[in-house]
Amino acid sequence: MNRRVIHSDNAPKAIGPYSQAIHIGDLVYTAGQVGLDPATMELVPGGIEAQTRQALANLRNVLEAAGSSMDKVVKTTVFLRDMTDFAKMNAVYAEIFRENPPARTTVAVAGLPKDALVEIECVALA
Image (cartoon, rainbow, N blue to C red):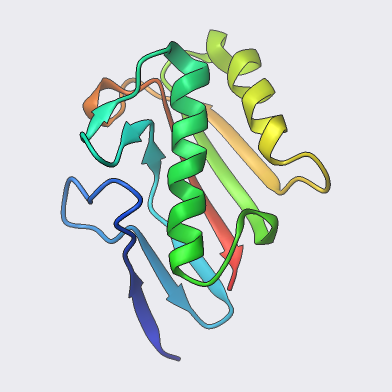
């Protein structure tokens, strides 16, 4: 199988030794995306809702660079710094994944890169 590294200029640059995504076989595996504005590499203002929207927009841009899309996502993992933000994150998430949402795991973590409130990764069909 060919392993292809995916990069999108419309998503934040990797802030470590990792790829934005890897396309292998029929699947695309993304790195986690936080609510960073790709132009400034700073977290977007506006709290959990704004960071969730931006993280999902970043994922969309990475998937599109891989020839995939949000409607082809089969699994997401959501990392929350504070589980009390779950309902607000979930409301924004539901705006994007309206019908036939992917499988999802949501976990609370002690911290995230750049002190983000949320990080989301996914696996999608290519």
